[in-house]
Length: 263
Image 1 (cartoon, helix red, strand yellow):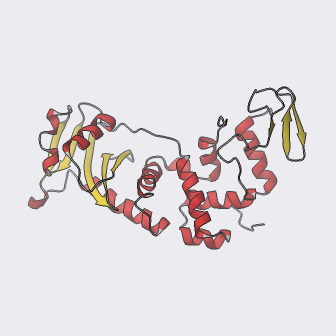
Image 2 (cartoon, helix red, strand yellow; image 1 turned 180 degrees about the horizontal axis):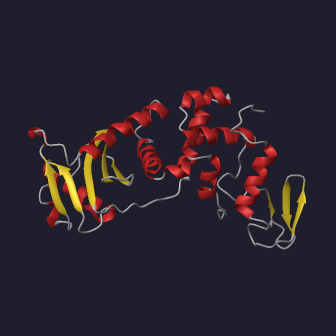
Image 3 (cartoon, one colour; image 1 turned 90 degrees about the vertical axis):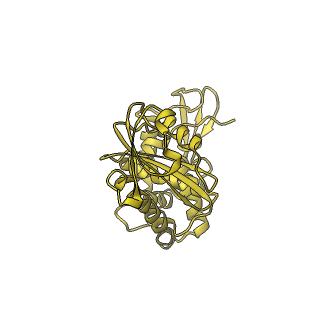
């Protein structure tokens, strides 16, 4: 259907999905029996009589798209192709593209980053939310928390440190009041930049991260609603910290596609 070299054939996609989910031998996703009959593009377990397809017991269950069009959408998302460009490539509506990008986002592997050694910390405000971001200096390791309000309190910072910063690290921040005395609430060595005195050496990396985040979100999504903003920030966090997941649709699906129990 598509002449793009990045899009495998329907048969190649099916083989990849089967290998990723089932390995060498097909089995029933419910009872794990290998006594499976195939008819057309569906299967039936001889033991528990479950009928299934390659994806019927995964988060792709109920997918109406052709496999090649699904792969095209996933390729666009992993490559960070903007929404409008994806629409023109796929000939799908903006609503459909955004719905699928949301679906891909919600099945990213969950990662709870613990930052250590030297950590830069800062906050920013947008879309009616506050974003707390920490970055392990000199690395791609970042952690974020989105708060649905337009101010950050000390208890938000303390909770962020408890969740994401290893004790006895060095914490580098600006001179905001919420950081004063923070070492009495979590065991860190605290160093502050006073921006009014043109001190930026200890927060230069984290200050730049917010600009990178805004540019990436604006470039890919053009705009986002306050309701979707937290999950898009989470997506950016994973994209920056674990870029290998986005190398190709194959890498993403190998990390995210598993059997899901359904009632």
